[in-house]
Length: 118
Image (tube, rainbow, N blue to C red; front, top):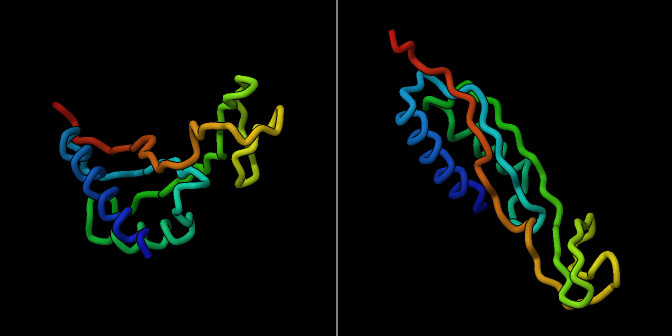
């Protein structure tokens, strides 16, 4: 299950940003997961809930936003979002397309509780 290694890297990023911002705790983590990323959201959530124990993110809520496949057609020039897992142009049906979104996982935002500066 590669979601564990993904979450280990995610936790490193979270801890880095929390430290840089002098956070007392992480309240919420929002990530975007592309439909072609190879990441299973339920397994990612399970791994996150396992790895967050005993860290600054122990009480954090994980929000996973799914990103559909987006393609750009080299024939008609159109860009389109797809619910299906194929790269056909949704406008002209061409196979001559490039994937422009839906393959990655991104840390979109963190909600941190920071120490008072006073």
